[in-house]
Amino acid sequence: MQLNFDNRLLRELPGDPVSGPQVRQVRGALWSQVAPTAVAAPRVLAWSAEVADLLGLSAGDIADPQFAQVFGGNALLPGMAPYATNYGGHQFGNWAGQLGDGRAICLGEVIAADGSRQELQLKGAGPTPYSRFADGRAVLRSSIREFLCSEAMAHLGVPTTRALCLIGTGEAVVRDMFYDGHAAPEPGAVVCRVAPSFLRFGHFELPASRGESALLRQLVDFTIARDFPHLDGPAGQARDAAWFAEVCTRTATLMAHWMRVGFVHGVMNTDNLSITGLTIDYGPYGWIDDFDLDWTPNTTDASGRRYRFGWQPQVAFWNLSRLAGALAPLFADAAPLEDALRGYADAYAAAERATIAAKLGLAECGPADQALMADLHALLQQAEVDMTLFFRGLGEHAPGAQALQGLREAFYDDAKYQAHAGAFGAWLERYAQRCAQEGSEDARRARMRAANPRYVLRNYLAQQAIDRAHAGDLGGVHALLEVLRHPYDDQPGREAFARKRPDWARSAPGCSMLSCSS
Image (cartoon, rainbow, N blue to C red; front, side, top):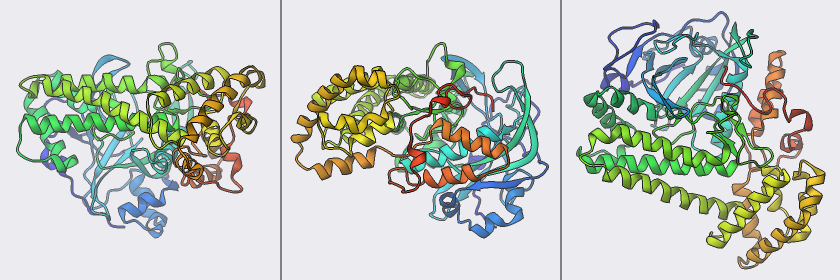
């Protein structure tokens, strides 16, 4: 097994003069040297064929005992130089100071088979200088969720970090899953995450908060040169402004994708938003079953619902505003930053219109279509209707009130179906009139099939796979991974993975809301 490492971040950005995992405040540096902590019995539990191909790894490489040793944290390949990065962040709207990679250790940057640069990062590989009071480990349940969702999102066409493999450690990790004083041992695991960059908004916020303007300048220059090479050129405010504007645009595109497929991140702190516009850090995320703009999957967010489904685009704007504040010392005036933030609003509005058109099968979206979708959202929420099933089914029936019977399986409550049947029938007639203006029924259905998945990583499906894995059966993980590789396709024989949430899962642990415990 060979990988071509070129660790540019370590070469070009200043590091911590102290090495090792002892907890400390790290100033004037963007990374700290720290090695993964060895585990008892690393074993490959699952792996992504697509990510392995990207890195130039074969099935034989995965089967080699060395693979589990390396990606479980017990051994290093030539060129690996493990480190954890230093960043801060706003958590639930409050500045939290230094945070950093508390249980993620980067192994280095690989030049992939396609020539791209990919960072390899082990999540759950042991303590770092940023672990605070934690052990730096991860449990199997959260690791399965991260592994599966990373790959599911990629196949949905959502910008995301990827996951190469899931490694069992052979060791127990003690966690208080419900924060109720009942800590218990759980199986441990490590996920190897893969992305061109793991830099977050918080990487820029921390040096700005400390008045380390030279370090901030160095980080911005590095980020543009490595991660935005098409913008690299003479340093100056025009270049920096173009870069921040692209960060805003990429973030707007990401938010539109999340809203399109019904994904809720759950913990959109500034340290959990990627500077390159990727979905990053799969913690207490969730997927919308019954359409609910006010739903959050995070128990920590249950009272304030700051990170609820429908509020995600606004939170992204708030986070970008904090990033703009951090970058302000590098700008002679605030106008370019303000322009970029306005650009976010414009970019999201355009992406939202494109999403509405695609989900409804229209060639374009005008103000009347936006109103049509808003009215549908209100009905879906009032009547407790499954988002994924409804939109997929809408594309499979001829428009009009007669389609409602075929959509009945998307409703969770028959009484609400009966109560809202008239309103839905009226909406479907409006929709039919709009579709009549489009002309081609085949084109409508093709657009909808490309935008509305049949399969998403429903919370209860993930929990069922986790329960089987805890019992020693990884078949559920492997089956889900395969189904989610083709989320827009009908897959005969796999209809069970496309069903709505069963009643028993409405409030079951892991199937409704989750804690940050992992």
